[in-house]
Length: 203
Image 1 (cartoon, one colour):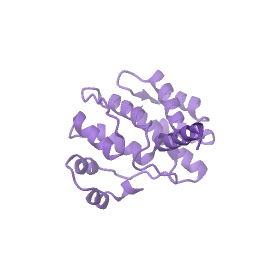
Image 2 (spheres, one colour):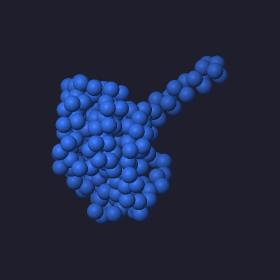
Image 3 (cartoon, one colour):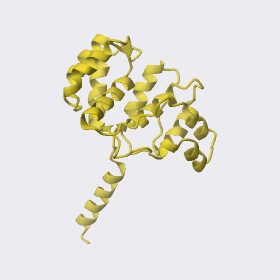
């Protein structure tokens, strides 16, 4: 095999292995739960959970940040990587879509990384078409009026819900997700035990 062919082969293998699938609902829920946990996990524990999710790059977690700032920052970080629960059968947002939403969200958000209902209506008028939800914008806007403030994760999950309705795909959202899976990982429960107690991690 010629040197050029070998280099191309290894480049393709590298990109295939590292290219992010983006974020789906299960992943968003898990990472939000991690940084918003009442147990207030430290940097070491957060990185331990990320490693379990096959994200080996160290994350500079700041537990002193405000809750919704922590949520915003970790979702921006994890979207870069292939990770546990990547599933092509579940509706997901690509890395480009998450970056688009985060950029526009950040322009509107206050210091706590929250936006109000009017700002959210404006936000989806910008991103709705780009994330494939143009036909659901009226429904989406009506829902917004019933709430007071929104964090970044709310926007991502809403985009997934409405796009799944349009495309008739599976969102995979976990109802009433608790944070036990974090406790099991941080306290070194075996993979088999974690999978038995949290089968949705195998999706």
